[in-house]
Length: 325
View (tube, rainbow, N blue to C red):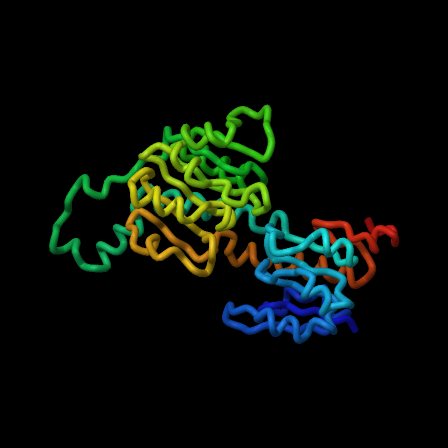
């Protein structure tokens, strides 16, 4: 029997592809994740790893896991994986390219509506029982109507396009930037997009090109009435530059599902009423999580049976020699 480690506890039904071919080691329950130290203690016996994209797969881990054949991310992003080194070591890397698309796009619209209508602030106002004392005050809670506003989407892949489809239902005008020029209607170079959009939502992968893609220079191009939403990865936005822009009223507000140094959050952000914060929940629906976990189990099972995984993001050299590329 092979051995597969999962860095958290998962429902039994998503493990079905692995049950007859592998012993399964699961991490802690309650949403907590296995520590890196614990993973390293098991590493020498592992043939496969399923993680939530929190586990850095580098030379240290690969040296400790000589039998390792596959690492499956329960995520779209793969910035935690040293793909080149994994290829050299003959280790498959996989992700789940579609499972979280709809749920992340839904969350982007939820954050947008929350931010532009001041839902968080209004909720706190009612919970503090200020409403009965102050009475109804028309006007002070007026937010921003989405219809007619320009939505700028930074990163126009699966999620970016799904956000655009939803935003059009609110009669928003869509513009976008992408990793390369596009002939599609609405394409803008990034700096042009930053100055034209009323709401900017970010959906790029994190890599060397997108690290601090949105910094002081880009934020300075935004309208003072514009809002920024980050649904991608924290380091895509230079967090201190964003804090400075917010404190100086250079932009109207922000919604952040991810943070540059998460789970740490910049202390100034916590005090700002025009910022909506969520703990990296963008893709987190029951349906999407189940589909993603099941695909990861299927990916790992395929590799352990000597086959190509369903959704690889690399092509290991040793596997190519065996005709599995």
